[in-house]
Length: 327
Image (cartoon, rainbow, N blue to C red; front, side):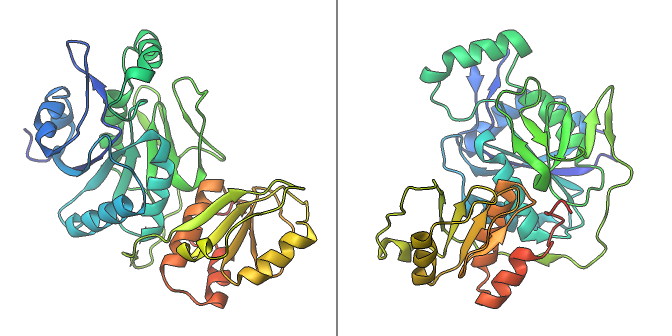
């Protein structure tokens, strides 16, 4: 192995499903599976000095506990790493990327997340999907995604990003597009890079030279629901005590009904009203728009995990902390 290979830590937290040469699906369910899993992709160690780190198995749930663990493991290894690649489940990949973006602000190490098209080891209800993917793409995309991710992780990037298919997308701009062909993640603005006979990363990315800010607290549990105009909210006040705040996706421009506005005041807890477009205001709640749903959601969880007072929370939710707002 060339001595000048860069050190890339490969974190495994689900999303690890690949086809073996025999045509079987293999994934990392425990630490013991890593050696055989890596043996299916020997080319990875040609690209960099790969050190795998087991975080969670293919069937484990992905959420705040796992995100906190990943962040802590990155901090622990940041001095010896040239970059990090995190493999995790496809349905939580955007949230995983965003959780790391808020937790590790201005970290001068590139963090790339990627995944297989299939997550979980129960394939009984996925046989048709897997067959279609095999016929159409020849696999589950993870092998090529990892090759691209490891190469990108050796280049400087301003913040965590998703590498999937032919696109490199900033976490704050990513949206899930399950109907996508090669790419199941889209960007609400220009991609940071594209794969086209090599990986081309944009040359005009903005890099923040400020000192890194590390937030190690677990993201707060919040109640999330969609408001349906004309349908009343029905929540047991005692049940709400399990949450640090409430996140409500509302219709754009449509004002909440009087009863709902009164409920917000009575709840006396942090409440965020979200729509990608402008939202109407309501006393006792903070309106957030002009960013992706996932970004607003994870930002709310992050802000509430850091024990900010009411005024600080409102200021933080309306500030452009990690370039999350479009304008």
